[in-house]
Figure (tube, rainbow, N blue to C red):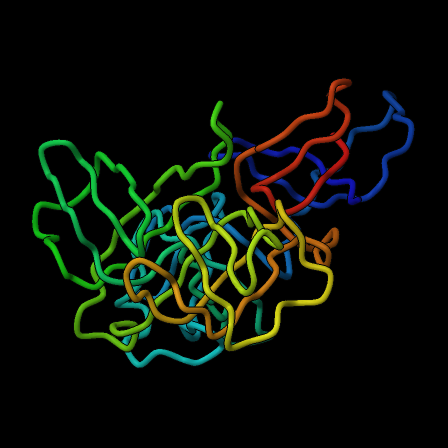
Length: 264
């Protein structure tokens, strides 16, 4: 379990920090330098040409990737409220890795009710563009949200990706349920995931947050790869944005984005 410091609220933004000592009021306190994190996860706030702003910091983008492959469209794909991960390069800027929660064809679009479906999941989003219609290829960024009925999704953006390198790809994220009840399937919310053609990650269990790629063939999502999503590799050089999905009874430990626990 990692200890990070709560810095700001969009969901919640967490940043690593060093230890502190006593203060000497007789001496002026020097300004604290703005230490740029080596890795950032969060939603884009603004896009300005080849620059983006995340968590109040401006970054120059060197390339835009999906599934570790560079996309020809580059920064033209980047939009506000899109979930991404940044990795710093020494001179040329940052590599932006797209981190959609869903990627696929949108269906059941109801602009009056602000609802739609993607990969078998029913969602709502008040900002859904009137130009997005059934069967368009879209990328949905969302954060897990705790409800009385378990984990749901807080949609941040729905972005059309027709005529790009992302069209034709499928992705789905969620918390595993009903693993082990039946052979080679489990549930991600409303969706049945069939993993009969692949092996599961070692140690995976119910409640784990996973990223599944493959193909949605109604009514099942046929998995070609399953990746366990955690913050185990994050350290004090990482900055993470998200929503608190669980807090212990003493309010000393909380879970972020259903992916890892932290000391408060």
